View (cartoon, rainbow, N blue to C red):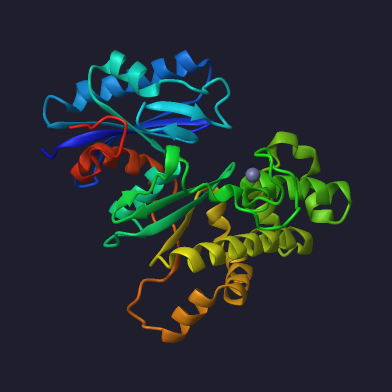
Length: 334
Ligand SMILES: [Zn+2]
């Protein structure tokens, strides 16, 4: 039997816990909802981890637990400093509380960095040491790998690409800035743009979604766009254009070999990719020059996720497996 680790992907809505072998084989995945108080969620998480350890531990070597959380993570202290989609979790000592319950080492990491590690391990970034991952979900997350490791910056706050300005003095963002990427290229932004178009009565097809209330999802807007609705398509033009501006800045700065787009909204790739590349060519000299060099064997510089919704979960399980990461994270596992 192969050694295995347990990965945890904690989101604002879903809690996923998986036992993953060092080969990448998924032994078992437990899906839960992120419901109730912070303590209730930690209890749910702990019992899922313990049941996986009990089930698979006797026959395989156990390597440890990795946890991916959306928010600003204090890696040295193992503390979640702030998380917009997890109310009441600010300054919560995740590692200390989990280790007390589990009796095994726990590695904590930002969820976008986990997704980047997952794609590097088994997805679009295999064979590459350096890449940038953008997760287009409720918000927009960013994970940067340099020499195979997450680049944390000061206080673990590197990669916050969701709050890069793409429209100067644009829409107000919860972070205090105006015109942030996630105000135009997240699932939340797509829903808001659709609700605004419905309010203006611009589209019969979109108006049919008006009665959905909370069920007015980015997916529903995407389907409306696929059916050819002009206003819905315009919303994804906005998404692609904002991503193109952000990527032009990232590419000009970093010139990495690969930028992976993941998260639920990346399923709309076919419809937002043309405006994305249009904007990118217009704004990035580095991208244009690479395109002119045009070596066919070079990795495409922008790619879709290959692990889909599992990228963060796989990357979280990878954390305790990678000896090279020891010392980078709050506690060295294994
Ligand atoms: Zn912002």
